[in-house]
Amino acid sequence: MKLQDIPMGGRFEYQGKVFVKTGPITAASSPGGQCVIPRSAVLSPVREDTGGLDKDSVLAAFDAFYLTCARLTAESAQAELAAARQRFLDKWNT
Image (cartoon, rainbow, N blue to C red; front, side, top):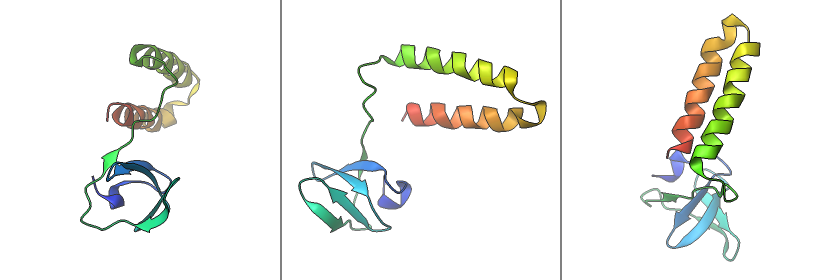
């Protein structure tokens, strides 16, 4: 993963430290402050802490929420809702 693939404010690991993207080529870490990340740097995503929840419980709760949203959403917005669901699942599984 490259810095350009990470959204502004996204967290990643580089050289054993966790950083937050603060600009197109900059990031900050709590102990080290702001620094420039080389374009050639290979970065690792930082998995967000789910607060100790297991994956199956989170997905079950999300599915229940999605089904309620689908029932309450107009037919014209169903495709957009389904796309948002898929984006969530894709991000969750990375």
